[in-house]
Length: 386
Image (cartoon, rainbow, N blue to C red; front, side):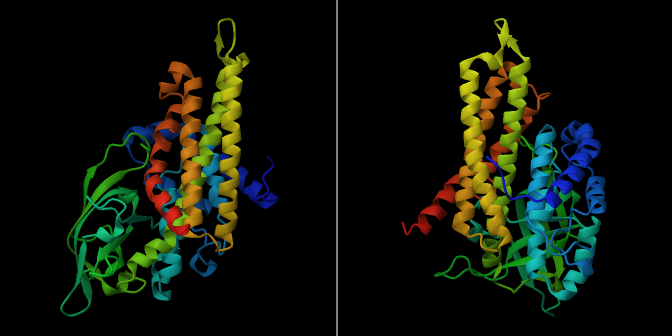
């Protein structure tokens, strides 16, 4: 089906990204996966390219108001190349940066945004804790105000934090006051913590099934002093801020999942045309045609949902329930499609030299992070008054 979300300007941007991926990412991606970390220099190059600061006002070195479509194009082109990615990019630009854009004071924007736009400052987000998972109200990391009121003293731990090793600033969800019997969500605050702070330490680098080029680690805070000037938004309103930004995060996950599924179909189609079994191409078998036809139809439906979500995000009309529907459908569809496309590769699909294997491993977590599929169903059911 013909897509209508992109203009000629978007397609020109796509060409720039496609060239960048071919020259700066694909040739080195296997090395980054082996190192379990993307070089910090990649973020500098992305800053030079001008894609780290979408939404940052021009006075702070950014391009000003921009459409989410540009970030969607990046997801599509990196997946299409060879199932690669910009690794930390999504966390930095699609997920963490919007917190600064919507909550930072003018002084904070002057302090942080120029560096984010240039790539000198990279961001990560620390919400999840051992034992709490998707239950953000269960956050136990504490920040106590000092006696002189100049800073907070931060103690606690976070886990499953992506991109922290390449970040200069970490947006940390903390508890600044106890929850109340009637509201477990009360008392949460967002602090912007420099990763070079005394008492800020990295735990073990976590080994994952996929996403090997993205570092994921534990973080520990031991009497970290955070200036009161680094409070993001208002004290005690952290949970509402997290909820406000989660729809965009979930849309980003869905867009990346659809891009991966579309790439998987292309990889599978190319493979079955070239691979010969019993004297004829695998593509000649009716089962192969049927499977790929099913996959193409499912991705077309998922793409339509994702595209609609992009338009809603640009119009500032993306609701939590709509984002949940989009994430649930797109990530579950991507899982089914990529699995079928790997099957068409036979034993070669299980070999990491083929991009389908990377897509298979990398996409599985899309049904978990940003809120599990089960959490998405709960949100949708609540929207239905169930």
